[in-house]
Image 1: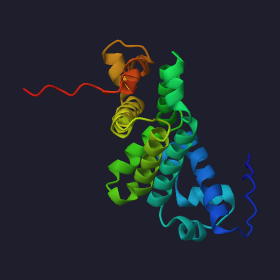
Image 2: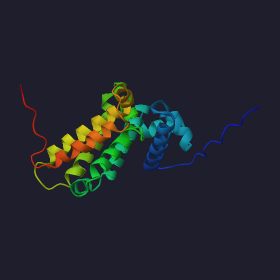
Image 3: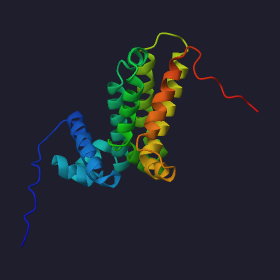
Image 4: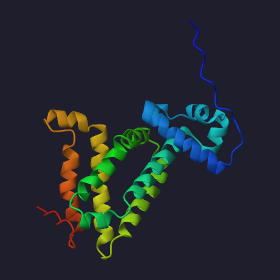
Length: 209
């Protein structure tokens, strides 16, 4: 029996910022439904009722669109980590809550797979929106701290959490299985280490041989 195709979204004229906002929202839906390969200009156009050429005009390329989406996801993480320094100092359960927010962004939110897709494409210049978003994340957390050593400690904490969350999202299930570890093993480990970054002296430096 012939199956009728779903109705296409009616096209209407929109301003640039509106198109980008709708496009990124559609890209995130496609990412969660079909992975990074589904985040294409053509699919975005179908989702928001716009031609491939118009989507290309607003985003430049599929790689630029994917990079903008990655930056948007990290900016969302910045908002989610508001008041994180106060939480870590006053709430014993906060380190795990923070670890869950970061790991969920890379795992359930799809940022881990998308980041791997962008990096393996070899288009390093498309990481600029991601770079700007990471800087904003660090600055937002540093702004919550008072001592002069905070910037370096925060950079190290973000480095640790982001790299671990990225690795856990991409290859974590396989490595955990090899080592007979629970699904949340890496999250638990990070939540135990994270409070150390609040120490005024920070993490002790590695001893050189």
